Amino acid sequence: MSLSLQDSTVPEFTPDPPTLGNTIGIDMGLESFLVTDEGEAVEVPQYYRKAQKRLKRLQRSVSRKKKGSNRRKKAIKRLAKAHLKVANQRKDFHYKVANWLLRKRRHIAHEELNIKGLARTRLAKSVYDAGWRQFLQILAVKAARAGLLTIAVNPKGTTQECSGCGRVVPKKLHERWHHCFHCMLKLPRDQNSARLVKYRAVGHPVLKAQETPDAIAGVTEKPALYASA
Image (tube, rainbow, N blue to C red; front, side, top):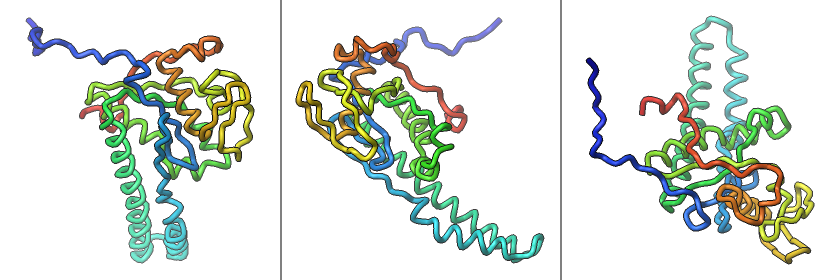
């Protein structure tokens, strides 16, 4: 004999499907931590870079101490404490940004970033400082608890395509403004990308001709950190 604690009288909640009206698109980057499709920007606090000189000094202090000595053990503890402070600052920032987004009571669409790949480039230090993976994990869990969706979309072309007409508008990395000579749309580059992310998440007509399939709405997998929450 088996017992079930499920209450059949309580209806199962199903989030509304993503639409242009109930979804936010965000573009995550290194110049700004994220920019929404409405042009709201959150700057990168750069906790690691700001603490880098002190961390290097503490690391040198560890290296100069004799292995196995009490002085080395104390130096290691000081270094670990400094790293923990940076990690806690970054996590607190991630929670605050996630809460700010979720107060809008809308689904959140973002690019499916290849964070491991980016971590092997010259941008590795900036990627580490931003902590995108941790932020997206926190965002997914909190969104699920709020009855909302996080939607990861294919990032291909989001930096070059126009969110107004879908045509390709080539831009170099240093060019931060999107100016489409086909439909004359002008707006910041990151906002244009955030709009494209949103449109892909909801299947906007401007992208119907794209070869990549539209994203399927869904909450990303819970990280082990929150598995028991």
